[in-house]
Length: 406
Image (cartoon, rainbow, N blue to C red; front, side, top):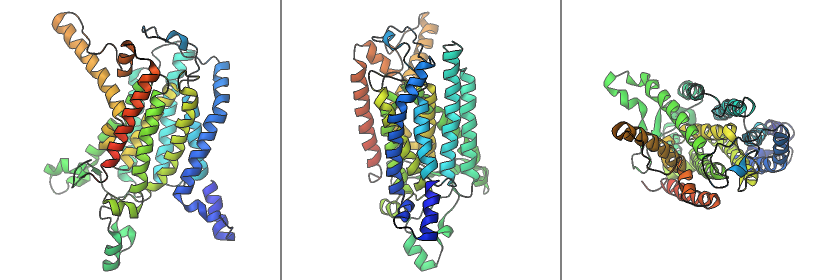
């Protein structure tokens, strides 16, 4: 909203300083500061409100140290993250940008699913919350929306040849003439690193690209479901999900900025995605919200994000990665989520296998997800969180190196 107001003031009245709102870097910085202030200042009021409404965490007895002390801690704190993200975005971003629209829809959609889950747990006294099948249906529904829009929208294009200046001079082409609809993505750490999902269907004949949605949309659904569940599993101890997510989102923010900037994408020889740079404002607000939430969620936590926050975080990260064609980088950027997911899958699979074979279920980890394994080994949760953050930072650096290491 402020973007359009200052744009009007700049064009109609040439108000000094109004033109600064056209710069993504300025609006991103403002979005980060505003979201951080909202999360830290109003976060306390939201926490007090949740406490007064007796929206407290019901802790299952898992035999973990310090677990019982967390009973009654306000949950649904993901509301803080959602509000602190959306308010700056609505004020500072271009609201007609297709990527911003998708991210706003993702935030509200996944936030609603998480909210319903938390509501059932707290007010209906059902520890299982929303049934898993309904969560999956919600995730698949979002995946269908995001995948269909990215596939069909004329505003979602790429420019594979980033040396546009020379091309335009020699051929007198407009920038829009160099943009194309594509289901291509980026394979990290490879020299010729572009892969088109449509190529999987090349056996179908010359018209195979018209069926690319058969691969692209299911991939979008799979990624959104996997990442949102990974974030959900990671939210188990104070500060873990918020901290690791902030690192991952900041990394994707850097990818987004260079992918949406013709100069940087040309220099780095990466796929240029027109209009994607606007997502940087959303990402800046999101990082500010996560850092502000961490103020209250760090050990000992005054509030938990609940599924309202964790499912939202996972959904947003997945959509950003898909939009900038970096979804195959998720296993590295979100390596902590992957490890948490795999620890549960391996633990459950091995337990079922050994129970069927030996008549007694056996475990690989003392407990899953992975962070609980280290708790069982006697590590204090603040040490676990700090070390997971360090691993997350190393993975982030490794991901950024992929821009040149090919």
